[in-house]
Amino acid sequence: MDLASPVAAAQAVVPDFPGFLARIGADLPAHCILTRVDQTRAYECDGLSLYRELPPVVVLPENEAQVIALLQACREHNVPVVPRGSGTGLSGGATPHPQGVVIGLAKLNHIVRLDPQSCTAVVGPGVRNLAISEAAAPHGLYYAPDPSSQIACSIGGNVAENSGGVHCLKYGLTVHNVLRVRMVTIEGEVIELGGEAPDTPGLNLLQSFIGSEGMLGLVTEVTVRLIPSPQLARVVMASFPSVELAGQGVTRIIADGIIPAGLELMDKRSVHMVEPFVQAGYDLEAEAILLCESDGTPDEVAEEISRVETLLREVGATRLQVSTSEAERLKFWAGRKNAFPAAGRISPDYYCMDGTIPRRHLGRVLGAIAQMETEFGLRCSNVFHAGDGNLHPLILFDANQPDEVERAEAFGAAILELCVEVGGTITGEHGVGIEKINQMCTQFSREELDAFSAFKRAFDPYGLLNPLKLIPTLVRCAEYGKMHVHQGELRFPDIPRF
Image 1 (tube, rainbow, N blue to C red):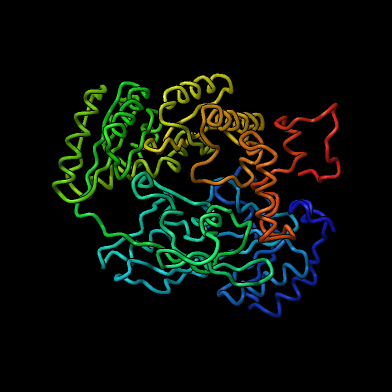
Image 2: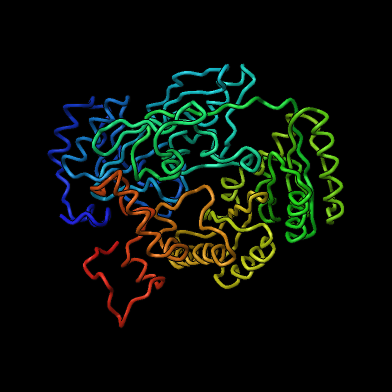
């Protein structure tokens, strides 16, 4: 069999489901294997509910040995594998394969070891993001990456998507806070990437594995870095008469050498969605609100807050409010972190995009998105990590109207391609999954996509790990109009279609 393409390999084999079910039935307890529709329905999508696929079987292993047995069975019986954490992902990375198995790792949810001396924690992939910080809090430590879904999302899913959060500007994404990953390959081999030492022998594959969206192996254990909790944190909430001026405020803060703990922007529509929900005291008259957090010692915070207030006044802020207590600081952030669910107050459905742009193009891109609202006939609410240019436009639509679904998808594609046009990327922290696979053709050349496929093939020559995600085929890119096709013919017509 030609294994030149992992996707081709996945489509060339026929899963042996009877043999697979018989094998795992002997290796795993019956309660870990879900096959009835009423059991598997909950796994038909992740946080991107726009795309759904009922999985033939869902398996919930309880330990690493069961994960190993599962993957060996998948390999032997040619069954595609879709790994799943808590299901909060927003790019369809955990969308089931119609002929595959969903392997949920939520039961591997134990904190194996927390060492305050080395400031590390060893956890299972099913441990919730927030649970790590809660366990570390008595030692004056916490885990820095804090996605908006941190109360529910799992650390294994964070590793798969390289998740961030409102504090990623200063403290980094998952990739900057994970020291070691223990994973199982499609052949059932256990491999450890990285380590707790300052440097580890061999190739540095850890950073490549983080963000690989389950295409290289399944995580069974993660060692994360913990950092000391700051003595004090305060937030400046600034109101602006326009989104453009708020964007200028972001630029001035960064240009002045200030790296805030968090720097987030919300437009007026977002503020009006959130304020009735959390009652954070947001300015309902402002066209945009900027949240800027400073943390450190009391003297450091006071000095930085003073500088930020001065800069924002110079840019044109119409109102400045500084949190006076920890409860008020958390209230300010609660509004930003609940922007997505609050969209349900004003729209039956929303489509959350995730693109990243150079900060200097913030005004241009937001202006273009406003024009797209008219072009596609849909509303869009903007909330984003302003400090690093990571946009999260929320396209509001009604899924009961088929034409609105199509327009929402086209709207999202246009935003992502605009991000690429101005020198940005199609994702910042949500991953590619199935949502952005067409835009991979826009951002990357065929040679680059082939290099990605070669790297996946080194880990998964059979193409069974989360196939049909992340890396588009040549045919798909040609159909999308992003690859040259000579006289209507493809160079490789035998390559399977997506």
